[in-house]
Image: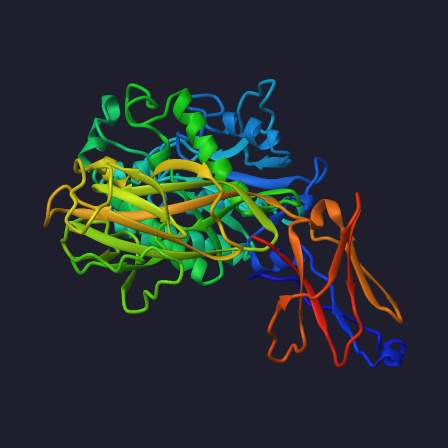
Length: 521
């Protein structure tokens, strides 16, 4: 379990009279979380006078050439309603509205990631309309106190529509852009996003439809780039507008640009990802499982042990691989065998000072799935009712673009444990030996607990430890006789509670004793 940090006050001289030495380990704080989450930006560091600096970069989906303000118009009310003060950066400005005054941006109609550009806009020659060029120029203007804290980058539709290789686009072109950003600002937070669908593009962009299948390939390659960059210590994150913008209802007639509903969906997706990297004192959003994370899996084609989904199950003999895990797809990172059912396990940690109120898991699969949390089934989709075995078929196959969408489902944040938790998923296909794929993200919304402030008083009768009742009721007092080889056990103490405080009375005894507050489940 995640516990309080140990800080001590020594009372040897006073307690020697009763032949007892007591070291009281009492201090714990939110600073622990801040240290563990190196990418976080503390909301309390920003105010209306000194807001977060956000640069929103992209092509016509970000620029005003199709819709004033584009998705940026919808983002400001979301962030403002969550008390996130920010300033938008960029040389160009949309028309303000009553709820939209952060109008500046770095959107360029027709922009691509890599040179050469293809379309002249904002006074740029066509060959210069690419992100490495325009973002580099932005760094020469926005420096010092006005340098970006966060980049939001939505790009790729034009590169893909022009027939550029989607894997090279992610691993080389986007990586070159990231290299430039981090050379100039090593502490930048960059949120990239997958490209939107290009299926059935028409009008003067009808040729883009010829490359629509490359959108999912680009998204998967971009996920691998993001995970690699994070492993290097860079604060790079991935949003997913491909999944967020519904193909049937959220596009303009050209089926390349989002309509109002689609722009609002893009804004919500970016807002969620921004909240995942912000640290607040009361409420936080956390990405508990990233897309493309490493999972343990069994693809033996037989039923696993009956406790395979339990926390204490030993999966060390299972295979492991990064998502997407599948067979017969161009976007698979790890290969699984072509059986009806494959079983996946993934661990994540809940810190002691977070109470998760809801979990949003985003599941991508080619058939059906049953999801378990800490040994309990919490969700199933596209599966028959009742117990499932390794030969139970999904009710239907999911193919094409829908198989690459991460479909969201929100459940209450119950059944979580302080410390290590296990998500287990059994993915079933509609037939044996068919194309298959699986990946998942898990996002949680949590309330941050303020640790109780503890005080001590001593007398010949022993030690009295006190902490607040209002936020200390979920904590229990534990003790051990040694920090070298601790064996923390519930403290042998008499507890008294009044309206404001909980007091533990510790009787004198030989040797040293160490105490800590530990949040109960």
